[in-house]
Amino acid sequence: MIVAKPTWNSDVKNLFIAPYWIAPNERDAVARGWIGCMRGYFIDLDQVDSVKEWSVTIYNHLASRSMPLTTDQTQFWPIDALETFRLWVNQGWRVDQTSPFDPADRIPPPDLPQKVKRIRADIRSLSQDELDAYRAKLDDIMQIGNPDRGAPWQIFAYIHTNWCLHYQEAFALWHRAYLLYLEELIDFAIPYWDWMAQDASVDGSPEAGLPQAFLDEAYIHPGTGKKRPNPLRYAAAKDGNSKLCAIGKMSGPDCKYVQRNPLFYTSGDTDRAERTKFYAMARIFQQQVVDALEFETFSTPQGVPGYPWANIPAFHPPQPDNLYPYRDVNFDGLYEQPHDNYHGWLGPDMGDNAYTAFDPLFLSYHANIDRMLEVWIRNHPGAQFTTQTPLQPFLGAGATDVSYSSADHWRYTSIGEMAQDSRRIGYDYGEPVAKQFTGDAARKKSPTAVKAKPSKPGKMAKEAGVSADPFVATRAEAKIMDDGPWVVFDDVRCTHDSYLIDVFINQADATPNDATSCNMHYVGRFSRIGMGLVDDKGRCVTQGVSRVLNAGPTIYSLDLRPEDKPQISLVVTHLDTGRVVTADEYKALPGFIPQLVWGDPRQPIIGQMAPRGCCSLH
Image 1 (cartoon, rainbow, N blue to C red):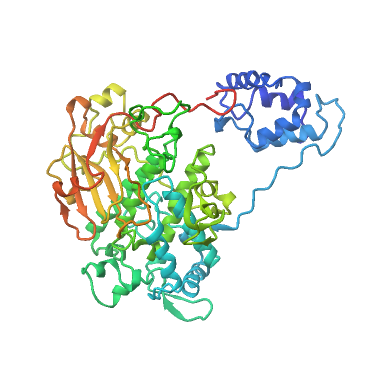
Image 2: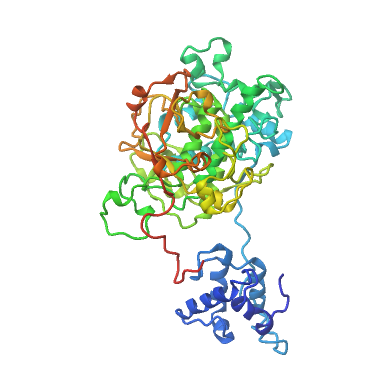
């Protein structure tokens, strides 16, 4: 709590030598580290005269969390401690209760949080009026139901068709700019669809499937009072012709509108078994997001393949590539996989880069992609990015306009501008309605597992001293499962068509029906969302990157070790036709041949990243 009339002897000194927010058994070591560190700057944190002399500077650095003590966030001073220190300074640096007051505004009150222009809310939290206002914006401004090539919605969606970036550092940041541009057009914050809700994979849960906002047939326009088709469901597809119709799998008047997986429109006993299995796949995708958030580096720098400065603390270029076998395995590399998985899972139009942005579901889906990106950015404020790389065709620091032909690259929005904390760009996220999924260490220990062994700790578990309870994962078990091994795909590049790659361990005869979360042999899905058209704008990497799937839970469940030589098998499905692709076909495509790598690629190959400042306190 804040001390109203603090003194050095009773209150302030203890903030430095016995910080109450640090665990009791660690306080002395942490405090000694602080004091020793700052003596290198000729500041004695345990001496009142020294702290008094430097008090304003000390406060400013502590409040801004830039004092060169540590990067450990648990050691940052809480608001109550900062305010007690500020009051002590402003009351005249009193040593004890007999010291006189000398009030002055030496340190002003802390800055209020920067105002943001828009707050993106969970779409399930919107009132009916707020939801209908958003729908009306899409109707009135974007003419979302108009298939004419000159309609605003068609023009906007074609930006993604023609310019989107994938399999590179710019992937998530380009899409951030894309959403900002639409928000500028409609002057409305895009609500996010929270597919990271705890029960989003459980059929019957209110969080499972699509939010009701995308399923309603109609809404009442707030301006006219008239009943209109729901624009979040009935949006004009690319050129007024859904992907299903373009490939001849559907015909009729509904071809005009975007199409999704029909299971989203079922409920109750209708298709229950198929829907339950379908929704359960979302848990695998959620876990991939959780895995991605564990990575400490963001990406290999844009346009500099094989030059991995973002992954190591220091180097003298050029270093041999073989020192960095996982130089491409970073947050954005793993994060793009659940992104692609969800796209393919959602349906025909969402599963093709040339068609996907015509579905307004894309907006709320990508708003949540951006929300998870923001989690990583805020947890890694010192992350490095290739700051000047342009994100065409967006213009300005806030991506408020577009240009399709400017040769002046400095005019375009850059990666660096989009890689900032979203509040600095001008928007933030509201709290989700549902409890969030944070990981499922025991997800492979299902009593209904296909070809399951008896649930008991194997040799790996016994040596690690883990729980004998088949439904309780201890910290040691979680570490075994999280540390790998990993299924690695090298030379991943863009493809024209979309594919689902389901990965299995020691199940050579697997079929698409075996791709289920309760199959102990199933590692997970690696989707490849095709560009849908010829890439003539240099949007795709030419040398390929590495992408990974965490096989740790599967290896643990099957009780395997390297000497067992586990075998990887794939079931590759062509997304549009549902046809299982032969091995000869998919091996001819870039990045479809996996290898099993033991160890955790999230760890830097050479040393650890050095902490900012003079001291390393953990």
